[in-house]
Structure formats: structure tokens, C-alpha cells
Image 1 (spheres, rainbow, N blue to C red):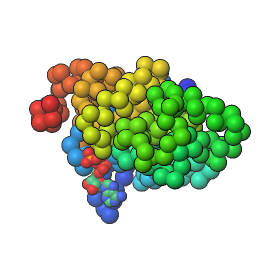
Image 2 (tube, rainbow, N blue to C red):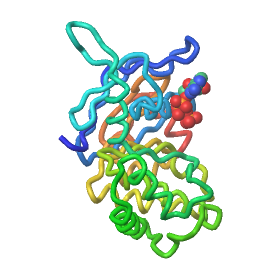
Image 3 (cartoon, protein in one colour):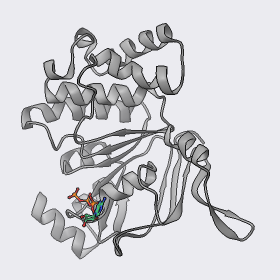
Length: 253
Ligand SMILES: Nc1ncnc2c1ncn2[C@@H]1O[C@H](COP(=O)(O)OP(=O)(O)OP(=O)(O)O)[C@@H](O)[C@H]1O
């Protein structure tokens, strides 16, 4: 089903040090999952492996019921083809801490780039839709500005519009507000809240515990490369079952 995501047995090591040690996860269409946990716990690595920006050492990722990664075939696991990986990657929109916009392009051109060059869609149709998306993130009046002329919060909202322009099934956010001045955090979280309300499936690595309580359906607490605790956001955050989660929350709240 569009917007569904499943992860099975995801493993990833760097230089012999395990960072993900068998992560399983099921995300329903329209669900918002917030990942919390100590620094180095593997949150970013998990998101990057799910998006196939990093090749996991082992494990399966299914988006819209399409399995990629290592596929069970004839009794063994076979690595998915590059073409299949690329197709799947397109189903996932990623928003990073650093906005990664092209400095020489306007906001509108940044949003248009993917659909025109990667999806080879009609330029005028893409322009119209990109303007609509910039309107959705409150930036229609800034379409002609380059990133340097925009605030960090505005740049991040352009980055969200750019991700939406590829019509992703799932949006992945890796600490989207961590690089922002505190007064700009709210406008980005507001756009994310709207998207959640519109039924977008979202995986969000964040230190914004308040956002996780308010918008998250599920909280996943990742520590040492394993899921230490997982459950309804409000429940986990108000009365964590695990001592490690409780200790972490006592530290950040
Ligand atoms: N490309 C890489 N090469 C080597 N080690 C890496 C690489 N990426 C991540 N690591 C290591 O993997 C571990 C987990 O990192 P990761 O960024 O996934 O954690 P995190 O939970 O997102 O932490 P943070 O909250 O600080 O962003 C860390 O020890 C990190 O140094």
C-alpha cells in the first residue's frame, strides 16, 4: 500500500564497529514515527540505510510493498539491482539538517530540478506544481530568491517542497531543525505538522521531544544500534518502560 514502510533485520557496520544491529520496523501509511535516542545511537544511519543513501550490510526495506536491499531468492539473499534501488530511492524524500540547496538556483528552480531532470516531466507542468508546493510551505512570495537571500527556516521549507516535488511515498527527516536559530524552528515544525495532518508517512529523527509528543504517532528509542523501546508517542514519552529511555528523557526534557 502506498506510504507503507517495513524494515527487517537491518545491519550496518563501519570499519568493523556495528552501528545498526538488526532493526525491525513497520510503519503504516500516514504514520509519523519519531526517532529519539543518545548521540551515536544509530538514528541517522538507520534513516540513510532506509533511504538507500547507505548500503546496509544486510536487511530488507520495503516501501509501498516493494522489497529492496537483499531479496530472498531461491533460498538465499540476493542484492537488489542498482535500477531497483534507484526506483525505490525515488519513493523516499529526504530532508537533511543542512538544507543542501543549490546556491546558484532560485527556490523555484531548486524545487523544479528533480522532477525535470530525474523524472523528465514537462517543464511548465513542473513549474506550476512547484509554485503550488512553495505556496504550501508558505514561500510563494520568495520563489525567485536564491538560498542566500532566505533565512534558514525558509531554506529548510524550500528543501521540504523540493522533497515533495518528487511525489514521495515516505518523507524522512534527519534532524531538520537542528541547524536553525531557535526562533526559526517553529515555522519548519509547523510545515511538518501540516504534512502529518495531510496523511504523509514520516520518519523523523529529532531532538524536539515536544514535537514527538504532539505530532508523533509512534516513538522509537534507538540506542546502541537496536530499538530499545517503541510505542505510542504519548505513552512512551510520559511513562517509558525502559530504564535507558527514562534516563535519556530525564536528560533532555
Ligand atoms: N560514514 C561513517 N563512517 C564511519 N562511522 C560512521 C559513519 N556514519 C556514522 N558513523 C558512526 O556510527 C555511529 C552512529 O552514528 P549516527 O549518526 O547514526 O548516530 P545518531 O544516533 O544519528 O547520532 P546523532 O544524534 O549524534 O546524530 C557513530 O558512532 C558514528 O560515529
